[in-house]
Length: 338
Image (cartoon, rainbow, N blue to C red):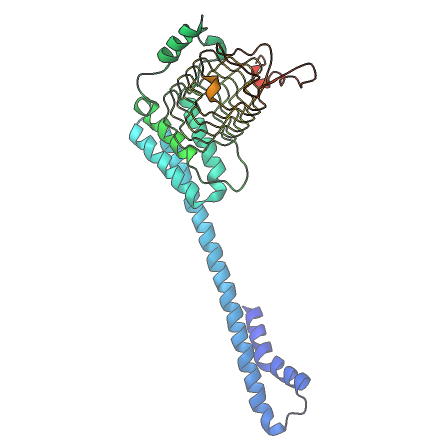
């Protein structure tokens, strides 16, 4: 208070006379009073403007603090509601978290992690060792049909389907973040046009999932189960599909350029218009596929690659790896004993 009074006194008494003497010392005595008063008025207007700006800043700051407090309260309430036994309450909590993410870009990563944990907690996928072992190509078709659920994920667990929908249409975070959805049971999920760029889905089960036009570029799909899935026009450029199960998957028009498909099993997969240029197909199984309808320019294969009957790999532009070719990538740490 004293400082404010001192500042006002300085502006109204001392400063006008000093400024007049410094800037216009030759002002006639008859005009000095008016000149000092004009300077005083100008200084007071400037002081009032500064005070207004300071007040506006503190008001804005208070609104920011209040807004953050409200977001924290909304976030806490939504997370608590995720544990509700009522499916309707859980659905409301998921949509509330989506709204918070839209309002606060700095909470998007946290909300994505919460929803990923919610989805993973709801149903872990069977470990690779527990998956059925096929006897032949016919048995693979039977397993592809029998492994899936009769009902979609939306029917079985509506809250998990909605959580995945929200994750796949999320607004971008201010920095790169990987969706952690590994080892998750997502059989029959409806994820058409999903944004799963760079997502970690290794060893997850997406049998019979709808992934039409989904964006899975650079995603970690190591050991994923995609038997019977619908991947038409999906974007899998540079994705990691080592040891993936793609029995009878629909891959029409899908972009698998430069993907790592070493050890992948594509038995019976539909490859009409599929782009497999520069893909690594060493150890891959393409039994009963129409590989001739796919583009395989500069794809890499070796003696362990299994082609459909009558397919001429050399004519299709496939490069056979020799001793000078780089070896397949080493075993993933995900496969190591735990």
